[in-house]
Length: 452
Image (cartoon, rainbow, N blue to C red; front, top):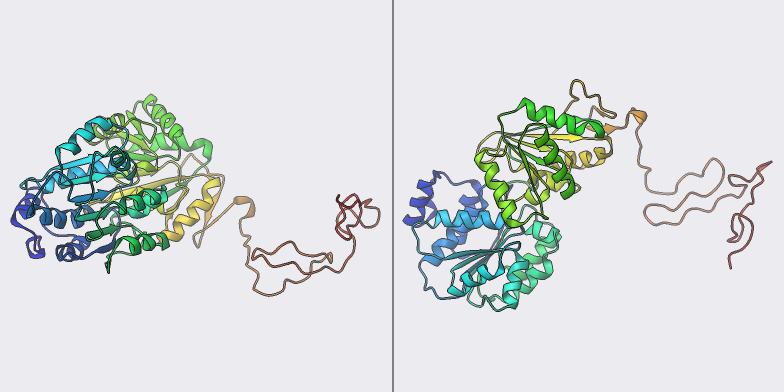
């Protein structure tokens, strides 16, 4: 199968051939024909599988044959600036043999320059919802002629609170339109948006939700929290020629870690939400060119960064949301290349690792590093245990009444909200023979008095 067999125009096929794209990915093979028919789509696939081309190519073909005016005929919403810029750049490459005008709209840069571009007239807008609403309020853009609406990474947009903005934008575009919603997961919130925005959509799911690329290998190193930086520097020095994307949890932590890596003789830059857009673009460009070897990022970079043949991602800290692990490591192992995902996990992150393991389902390669003994261990059966409680297992009590306590007192409240059974009486802790304590009766306090 090639792109011509999917029904794409010769101009688009010529552009794809120039980019080295010959065989459609599974999501492209299923989504492009349906989109060319004008169907609404609810589509899901793992990151790095070519979703931008899946919606972008049929969108470009539809617009290339229509009349153009001043107002946009297609709108693509994306959750982050980096993703919006990447989608815009990809569409520009696909449309190199077409005469279409595009604009990318996001915060952190001059609103005036964007307004001037929009007023001159564009066919396609790629936008982050917040900045697009700013332009709508200033009447810099009119969405009443939008024919195609795309929500890219819809689950991420809902995660970061864009639902009110999305609904506001939906109210401003024509009801008679083609809508394509792409998301890594189809949870309840996504399906609610789909009901509001899509008409009898064709649902496409080419891979299981939260699936990861088969070309990525996973390694976990249990380490002491105080040794993480030293372990990271050792890993970076071992692979001294490779580009590496390092994920940290906080903006301040990313800045500090980038400085520490640079001080060790390895040039590093940080990228996060507090950086200006120009600084973020500059850091990303330096990383892609090889001028910077290590990019330290928060989860703002977990989606939207397309770095060709990135060999390695290191989780300096695990994400608080386990699904973000999938998106983080989706930066490597893309387009058929191999990749490696390494996670440095401290004792207090064991619960997060369990959650990641539950999502991945496949066993993780977990082992310590020579010279860095951890303060917790990973047991067989993919069970993570504190060393002090190794070998102990907690079992869930079956439904039904709980057996009486040995001291005859009532149990505490059940987790399911049920009331504890009445106890048989008798002294509580601190009461009893020689205990000197007061037994509570009828709502009394521990000192024997009643509350006022």
